[in-house]
Length: 119
Image (tube, rainbow, N blue to C red; front, side, top):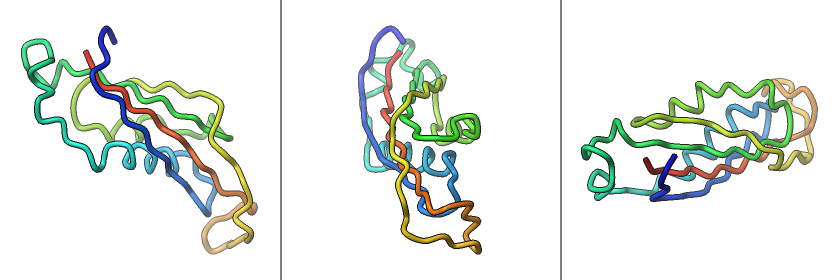
């Protein structure tokens, strides 16, 4: 990405099931859900949303190899999407194991996301 125009951050949590993909999707949704970029086309080459580049930085606490980056990328409807995975986030106790929620242990995962938009 040559030029960053917009950065928004979000947090996603999977309380039960220990699913870093679910927590990552929620973090991206949290980052972009309440935003609108009505003038973004004016800054993009050829004023096309297809020329937009989106880089998602995910701070993931555990099970990085279980992260389905394609599912996370699908949260962004336009442009070329890349994902960076960094150490971070939080794995902490939920205080309970619920087998009916597919818990393997009592951990919940918290993922932080930074969504960078530019060209």
